[in-house]
Length: 164
Image 1 (cartoon, rainbow, N blue to C red):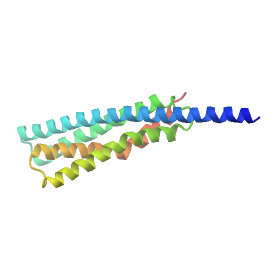
Image 2: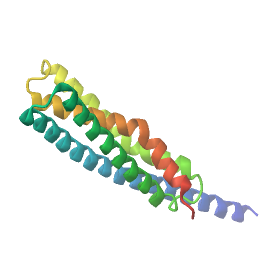
Image 3: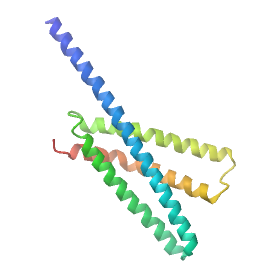
Image 4: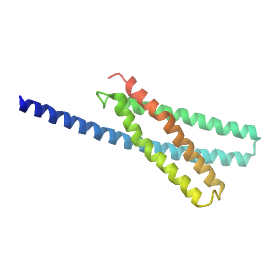
């Protein structure tokens, strides 16, 4: 009887270690997706801002253009995150919600750390010196806040909603 308990215990430990590896692996993949989304959003946000300066629209039109870009990109990010949740859903046989939430935390915490470091560096430099720095920091801040706010919910929902 003692041998059977030891075998079951080792099997459970191996399963737990495999789950931890899967969580870390998919969290790092999601972190890569988030960096790609931040870069795409940053370049797009800078482009829309520069375009707004070139064509010189009214203040209301410029604000509407930026908000439209932000909402469209938030929707696209939500679709990417939901699909990622559907992809990782079958990988976690049990505790899909918890394991996918842990994978999301692995991807969000470095983003929040980067925002904290960037804001500290800007504070040490004495504030913003260039408009491009302002727009770049706003893009990083907006995407990080979007990820921190909605990513956990959307990825977990995608993982749980997958039928497998």
